[in-house]
Image (tube, rainbow, N blue to C red):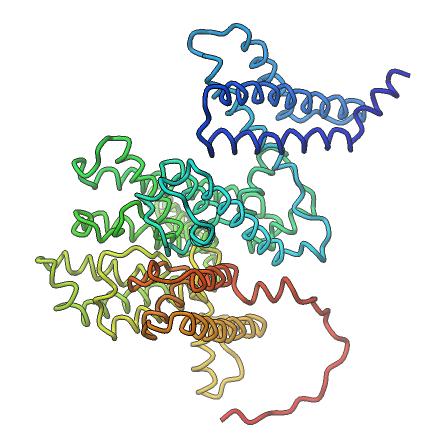
Amino acid sequence: MKQSLLRTVLRKEMVGLARVTVLVLTAFLFLLEFGYRADAATGLLLDQLSYGLVLGAVMVALGSGLRAKLRDEPVRNAEFIWFVLGIGLLLLRPLDMEFWPKAQHWPHLLYLLGFFFIELSRLELGRNSTLFNPALLFTVSFVMLIAIGAALFLLPNTGTRPITLVEALFTSTSAVCVTGLSVIDVGKDLTLLGQWVLLLLIQLGGLGVMTFTSFFAFFFKGRTSLEEQLRIRDIANTSLVNARSFIVQVILFTLAVELVGAALIYYVVPPDAFPSIGDRMFFAVFHSISAFNNAGFSTQSLGMYELPFRFNYSLMWILSLLFIFGGLGFGIIFNFSRYVRLWVSGRIRRLLTGIPCERHPRLVNLSTRLVLKVTALLIVVGTVAVMVFEWNGVLAEHSSWWGRFSTAFFTGVTPRTAGFNVVDYGSLTVPTLMVTLLLMYIGASPGSTGGGIKTTTFAVATLNIFATARGRRRIEFSGREISNLSIRRAFAAIVLSLVFLGLSITTIASLEKGVGLMPIAFECFSAFSTVGLSMNLTGQLGDPARIALVLVMFVGRVSALTLLVGVLRQVNVSPYRYPKEDILIN
């Protein structure tokens, strides 16, 4: 009888309801704790609420463990650990130790934060394959993150002044889409909490919300269903066998590169440019994350054009390497690094033992070859173009040839969706602006933190042009034939992007009638390719034009083709074929 009653109490629906209740109240607690300025009485109330939520989390963990025992299932380690930690916090609370005043409940908040992430990681990625196909799930995750970010920017504690709804929506979209266009002064209009919120949105948006949720699911659940792994495979664009390891590698590699970047930035920036060591460390961390994720946000009012950073050439090279790595794509980096690792180890083994090196045919796949060659070509083209057209222009303020070359390299690379500026883009010549538009349109590589139509799309389109001109029926590169599906997707992406860019330029030009066509086109290309460069126009736009740019940034980040795939019903292979007939093209 007692066991039957216990089974009734520990039903899945009851435990799930308790879990959702604790999660919602925890989110409400953090909203009040950090979003508003509370007086002493409110602070005591929040302290009591946090204590009650710890008790609720302990009961949820206990209920999940007992339910698993009754069903003869293994108890998850995370539930056991969180139950023990919660009991410890509840027992320590009445002692009222000197180092833990009742008004300061940081241990409770840290415990609840961990519990919040663990329970969120248990959520499935979506069971309905129609409503939650990978393309639609990817799009919805960005919409939700943008909405949450906009709500956070509206809180009193995140801004030094009241942030309007349009400003909050624009800033959140720009951060999640890692664009970098801003209608506020990040360093002056956002508090330290607001800047941390911005940084978190950049990190989540750059790597993708599903990447983080998948990582936490792997970490805390220890396993995933086959359905979840299939969705992760489609979202991460990897194989089913490597889905789990790929997600973990992406997170660890990102954190490692950002940590190294922050350390290098901290070392090269002048100490006298910051009021304290903490400000200098935050500057380094902020710009390392912003650069690697190709976001382009800066805590300085003029970005990297601010003195003395405008002439800090070491800082330019560090930031350049960060957003080049971020724009290559994780699959490309891992594939090429594996080749380099095997090549080096083989040479060392041959040197030490005399054993011939093993041969690894086609270890570097076709995508990696295309991305590396196109990236190198675009870097050279961008750098040379800036040096040729701006040597006596914006580069003239740099006295040394090294300074001019470093500035030209940075300016030639940053249009590849990075968004940092060390020159005034309103002062660039028309040829430089046209080259910049082209580089922004091409953008970064697939699977990276950058935007644009992607380097592989540009490469496939270019190869198809030459193959057609030569009368070839197939597109071949590096001993491989490019599939017809890749060709169709490349041209679909190009056509959709050009149509959408044309519509966006027309719309904003009709809303901002006193502005020239070049600044508007530059702004739209920058927003669509998630670059963040501007000819000093963003802050002058009215609210309708800003909302239009929000849509442009969003479509540019998730891509118009992904939106169509997510919305339109996928058609299976038809069992029939119509007769073929050529049409006149030119």
